[in-house]
Structures are given as structure tokens and as C-alpha cells.
Image 1 (cartoon, rainbow, N blue to C red):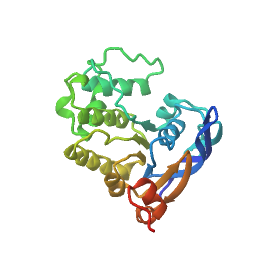
Image 2: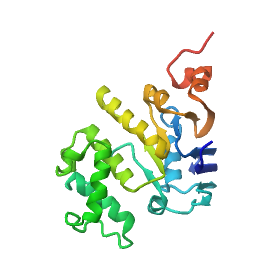
Image 3: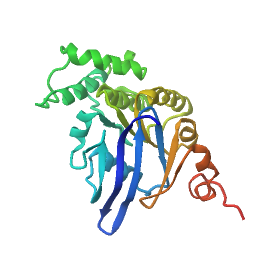
Image 4: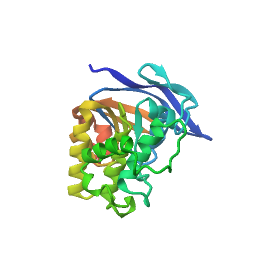
Length: 251
């Protein structure tokens, strides 16, 4: 088994009486992609928020390389080597594609966090930004305003921003949402190529993508992790098929 990088230990989170994450434990390992599936409202994004530092759990721990990072926020975890994408691409539409990535690098490297300092002349930022854009096939879009990109290109830009942070862990929240078949296929190829160099947690509703990419799959229901295993085992689980994969339960 490859090295364990990120570990969730008995994580729980409530919003009032609603328990959105309920005693969840699992680990992510270098070079492996774990997919997290479940119906809307199952707690997938809430769990991603707890893992990335957007939310603090009510109980349990998050360990990164064996170090307890439960009280560290999103920025601190990013600097440690954890990158997160969101369901809706978070970019600066008026800035160039290159500047969006360069600003992310500046945010990680600069203790002053001068987010809107001129980056166009800073080759120490632009060189790794161009390399990240090349990895997601956006090098030829570098000088365009980010807002001018097509939807699929914006999703790839967000992935480039994550990669520019040189993460060890990638948390990908529905990266294929809203993409057409060709864009989905291209993005699946990109994510698959990233897996050997990262530990990846993928939240996704596209079951074809999930079963094509995942080394392991976890199933959430009402905040609880109700199933975990190899794709073949999850596909064969009658309860999972009936509840989440759109198949009728056997009589």
C-alpha cells in the first residue's frame, strides 16, 4: 500500500439538529483516487469542507502526513500541500488566465498575501503558472480574460490553479459537472494522469467517470459512510445500486 497522506478520524459536523457528517473515517493514499458518491444532501460537500478547512468539525480529527491539522484553516492547509476545487469554478473573471494562476502561487508563497499586486512582470510566478496551464491544455489561453473562457475551460483553469500550489492532496468537487461528452472525456484523461503523483478525493455524480477513475469508492448516506470498497464491490452491492446507481432492487 502506498503512503497514507490524508486521514479522517471519526469526523462529525452538525448544523443545528442536522448531522451533515456523521462519524466518518477513511484515509487517502499517494497515487490513488478515491471517489465519494451519494445522493444530493448526503453530506459530500460538507465532508469536503471539513477536510479542506472551510468548516471545523464538531468532533474528530483531520491528519495530514500524520500531523493534526483539524484547527488549521483552508489557507494553512493549502500551504501544507492540500488543494481544493469547488462545485462552481472560483476564478477572477476580469484577470487573465495566467494571472489567475500566478496570483494563487503568490498567495501561497507570500506572507503578505498581496493578492492584487502586479504579477505580469514577475517571472518567478508566471513560469510555474504557465507550466500548470500547460498541464491542463490551457497554455494557448494564457492571455485571455478568465471570464471569456468556456465552461469546461474554466473548470480546467481551476484545476490549474490547484496544481500550481504543488499539492500532495487534491480534493475535486464535481469537476465534470456541466461538461459535454468531449469535455468530460478530456477532463477524465487529465484527472487520470494526475493520480500517480497525488492522493485524490473525487466527489462526482457521473457514475461512468467514477467507475472509470476510482481505485476505491465510498458511499455517503445522510452524513454516514455506509459502504467502502473496490469499484467492483460497490457496483455489486444491491443496496448501493438501488439507492445511488439508478437500478431497481431485486425482488
